[in-house]
Amino acid sequence: MDAIVIDDDISTVDVIVANVDWDKFHIDKVHTAYNVASAQKIFKDNDISIAVCDIEMPMGSGLDLIKWVREEKIDTEFIFLTSHEKFDYARQAIEYKASGYVVKPFNADRMEAELTTAVQRLSDRQEIQKASKFEELYAGSLEYVEGSFWDDVLQRRIVEDRSIISKEAANRGLDIDTDSTYRLFIIASGNPEQIGEKIGKESVGLYEKDLTTFVTDKLCCDKLHQGRIVNYHVKNLLYTAIICGDESKTIDQEFIDEALKELGNVITVYIGNSCNIEELHETRLHIEELDRNNVASKGRVFHENDEIVMLSEKEHILDQEQIRLLLNEKKKKELLNLLKFSMESLANQKKLSAATLTIIKQDLLQIVFVYLHSKGIQATQLFANDAFVLLESQSTDSLMDMMRFQVHLISATIDYVTEVEQSDSIVQRAKNYVHQHYAEDISRTEIAESVFLTPEYMAKMFKKETGVSLKQYISDYRVQIAKD
Image 1 (cartoon, rainbow, N blue to C red):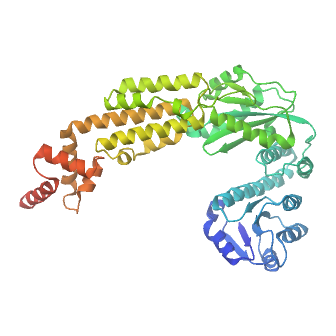
Image 2 (spheres, rainbow, N blue to C red; image 1 turned 45 degrees about the horizontal axis):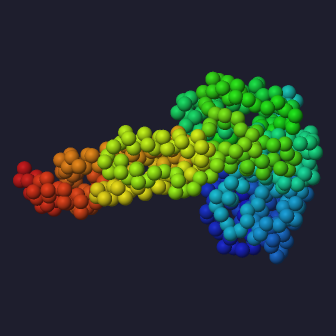
Image 3 (tube, one colour; image 1 turned 120 degrees about the horizontal axis):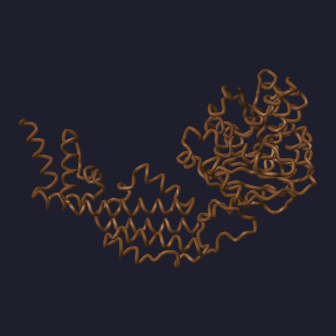
């Protein structure tokens, strides 16, 4: 597959070509042009699938180029570059079926997101073209086309204007009543990695398909079929949007319980208010915000207007003095029970949100890091492992994730401080490091890092236990090995 980048600014073209991972999109060759005339020649001589084009150029605009491409019936997806968002440009771009646009200055992540959409649109059209040759497959393709349409509406790839949405539906051959009101149901399934832990990693790939089938079978929605069920990801979370008529049957707790039995995963359902088709995108964003703040009440049904979280003041979140006291006394069980009670109390008072969990995580880390520093232990080294990094990254996703993180953090901290205070084991580990690396130019800092201590504390502990300095021990061991 070939692509082309067109901009009158040569440096912009060079930056885009150099910074986009074209291989990821199966793009074998990237052509470049600096005006419309040069681009037209490349289009005539090559099969261009993707065009990244500046919308405003002195020798013919990007809109002029896409108009010519459409008139020539060349099947190319366009992504426009623009220095500022203009609705008139967006409207004209939609009329010529542009895939999307990126606002300058260039951002590689945004560009790759738009390329993903463009490649998917190409793939969709290819599927439709294949299906049109076989009448018996057309009905299934039509559901696929409708699913792509609703996905574009929800992700605002189609401008939030009813007339534009209606025209786009007609262009795709869909019978969509854009004057009706709709109700958006969103199912939050959580993190796919955690789903894999529950149902088996080999089954994660089938989960979205199984969930779609489950929804189709169980939910009595007006005109519901798989074309109105859209699975999508936001960061590390899986969502399933269901677009129903305003008078559709609602979802109850029994639906969630049956999903757990059949799919093996706890889902949370959010039911949006009745809205117009052009308001579905905003409804989706609002529901996702509700889900981000719903860290303590998973596995339930919520309506868009439900009060899930009541914000709390930072200073009232945790009893930091009590946490420090129990930590200093190394009372692990009591400290974990205090944290568990505090978290459950906040959840019952509806005072837990993603923002609150972030504050709790930051406060706990600060307390622990200060405590470890006072013990001469390098916290950044102690927690430089995949298990901790994963638990910390997931800690603000839910109440259970935070509690798992707290158990790991407090247990690792108290256990290691206890081990350090039994200095013979730490000194032996330092000796073992010397024995393994004596032939290298090892330093006191390296040895200290291997046992997560500061160099000064390590040296002091070593001399106290062995009667010789660390430097002298290394020298003596090298002499001993040389004699042997």
